[in-house]
Length: 367
Image (tube, rainbow, N blue to C red; front, side):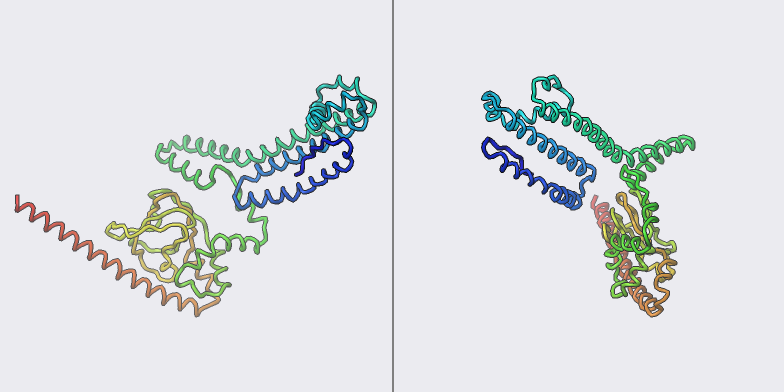
């Protein structure tokens, strides 16, 4: 945006052409919106900044118009001297006073043309004040709508738990779940998705989950059509810290993709094997083999997982019977390797335990 600060009285008609550079403001606002998308900045902040810029440009234009009127109509040496010393400042003060409807008594000492001009400016100022007030209220109302819904939901849940006389530990867990799920803003995701076409919903799910699905070993090489069918079957679930997601020894019927969060994997004996984080997966063997779980998975911190059930997976690959057979063979091989690895770990744990026992016995005899 170019701000007009001319001081030469002789060339003001040509200098005012520079004001046309403010037409670049729409391009600037588009860049602001693109930058906000990249930086994931709150959109209403950008709207407020853009609106403030447009109001500033409007004031600059009015100021320039008043400045030109003063230069054209004021012939006195005193007026010209004031203009030369404070060219834009005097005009800006005049415009702001007119827009804010203050200093109207100055109109009686002005020329008829300036009087008419300032009356129009006062009317425009009244309209501008209404527009500014309405825009600011709209921006902050939009901002607070989702937060108000969130607060109302918390109040309803609090009343429900109070009525049911739930213990404080369970109340805290419910509140932590709600806070993690909604992030203090209520967004009706299901309603939004229901308004979209099936193709758009599929595109959104694909954008969120396709990379996680492609990381699964026996999903690699599957046709794109099959991967898309699998992605559309995923369902989101949330787990809080210390929640047991799967339990060793119990039948499994689904696999999980970690969208965000951290989980810990344990053996039957309670030994921690590893941690899995964003983008990882576990339980894929349960999609094709009806075997008990060989490990326990517990959430370390709040997690959002995508769940793929065996039933949904079988429906997704039903049109491709050859794929089902290949995936089953791959899963059997993976299960065998997993059992061998876990048995090796258990033997190592047993050996370490015996060594510790022998050392303890030796120390006892030495005493």
